[in-house]
Image (cartoon, rainbow, N blue to C red; front, side, top):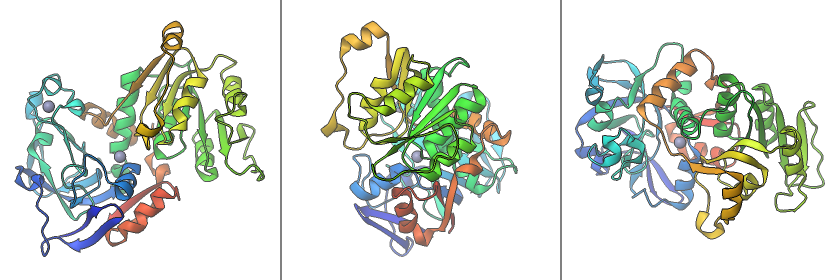
Length: 383
Ligand SMILES: [Zn+2]
Ligand SMILES: [Zn+2]
């Protein structure tokens, strides 16, 4: 079997792992095996590639956004009291969460919060390989969903990130039609939040980002306002339509034009919901500055160097303005099923988020493309 093995920061190697087997805990789980059809590259994978991660012990195979195919008949959902048979040769997606099934969170079916959590593509071998072991816990909790013909393998690989966004909104409360939502970050995750906010909840939604081609995508997805933060003060960018506002990178200034534009978008009130869909620590402070009274701020993304930058919040500001700041992490089988439904009925168009496709041998190129924000989601689809 060919796989891309991560050996530590800046070291990933495409190789035959039968000749050079890597022993991980995944090999000791009994469950099933999937043939991998497609696996997309998450920003998390790029951060691990560069810096390693406390959850990741090399050598290991990364990749958690997986569309695969069963190689035997399997039964899922035993723990739900309604088991389902899936025939051999069926295309499926998985939730990468591997719960212990014993802790208090697992008993409450909050598997993503498990005290002994393991994750496909992070603490056990993932989808940048021809085949992948699926531990039996994932089968038992129904963390595997079948994919109808209406979705391509590449689209199906994006079901997992979509399910995480659905989990985030279910955690903070779905936007109401009258609410103003601001998404910080123009990557695939920001654009998924935009689609959910607009297409499912019909909330007026603004997106704040840096990259012209991604913001133009946001425009085509119906963003109500697009605010581009421009690092290059001397460059003028051609606005693509009347909704498109180009501002200098002034996030740290006290009379920031970016903040003024958000206030304008929200009729002076501030955002009811702020989604942080970027790993930029500056987004945290910016979110606090644009939040309205009674607002919800969700830290969806992992933040780069969160320790060194920290986040100071005046407790009285939170108290008197009744602000909620939350985090959300990964997803659960229910959000996975919902994600498949929304993608199939085209409430969410995953095809718009697919960037370049690569063969597994070119994994490093796919990671670099992701790191440099070229295109949108890079997908490995040849093994
Ligand atoms: Zn991911
Ligand atoms: Zn647990």
